[in-house]
Length: 185
Length: 81
Image 1: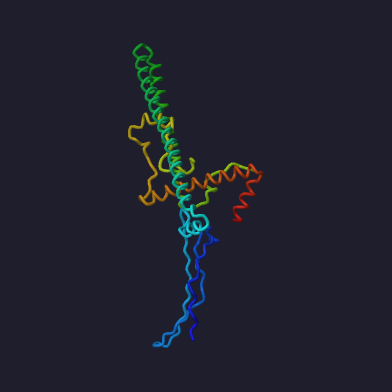
Image 2: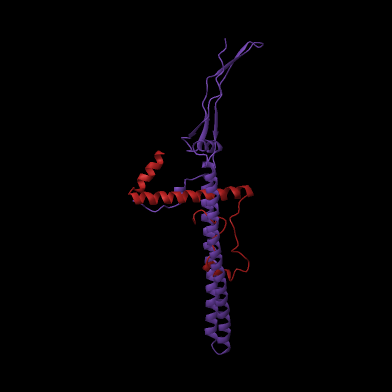
């Protein structure tokens, strides 16, 4: 007499001890037996299933479980996700726009400094102060050139730092290692 | 916020604008691009969620500080969870 096969075991959601991510586990049930009478073989099979979900939103199984406790929960989670993303994009837009405005102001100021330096030096040279004119022109051009070089270097450094942060995020480093929270000691 | 936004470009500034006066070759216009559009989308979403995590962390630390917990207590509680 063959034993009756076990009913499908219920899914369980648990946090993975290694990754901390929720895992949907189907615990191994009792092994099932079957006989191949033609080949005169006895077969034993054991099934175990594990699913891992990773991502910004909870897994569908977790959402379903939350909905059982509180039916509005998935809607709240999705709405909050959308609202938070919009809020963050709006903030980014403000930051980028103000930076771009600052950059434009810098270009205008730089242009005015450069032009007035060169025109002033020509005026000084024509009116009998050639050395002063030379110094003025050199100072203007050199200071703008220094700003150009240091600005480029600072920009390059910032982009390299951001690339490193991107790489660390891609690796999944914990958020507290990427920011410096204020000391509460 | 600055830790997790604007990864594709360096933040524009007044000094950069002054330097741009001599940037005839448009050398300031460099970006951290992604190898594929999928990865770009992935990184954008990941950045958003890191930013949310950083906000939460900041709120947790602020609350912990308000109720008199030490930073080490918060770290210990987190390692236990």
